[in-house]
Image 1 (tube, rainbow, N blue to C red):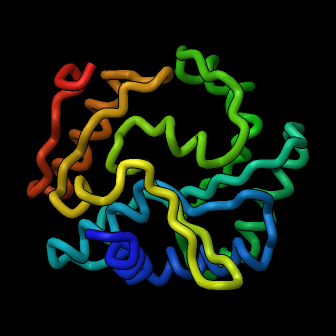
Image 2: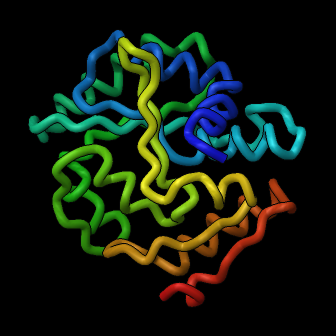
Length: 191
């Protein structure tokens, strides 16, 4: 699977396409739709399921040096107001702020980030380290590990600085229940 193939699959879900379009219009800095909603849409297309099957929420990353809660709250409200008609849960997070709350919430270190793609790099699974954004010329895709695991329905741990085997196990178990075709690699296989 190449970038165009993945993008075609991910955008079969009209919610992904609508969010990508709206992020361009809102002009949030360094904004991407990321992770599970993209990969799970591809899995659904590859396994013959409805494009939105099993998708719990849609994640949006952006990077604004203003790390105040007020600024992030304003961005969250703007996205949610503009996309309320979709009737889905959308989680919007300023990647410049994650290091401020992540250690307390998850009990793990989280060094500050410099851009949204650095947040994508820290996902628990390598197969979900993907982001897309709409540009005036089309779409840009960030996928540091490519798309082979997505195409082959493989869930692979990402042994980064904030990796949690327990969180990985819980996420992989949820996905395996929804998509029994998945091959889940054990966390210790790569650690």
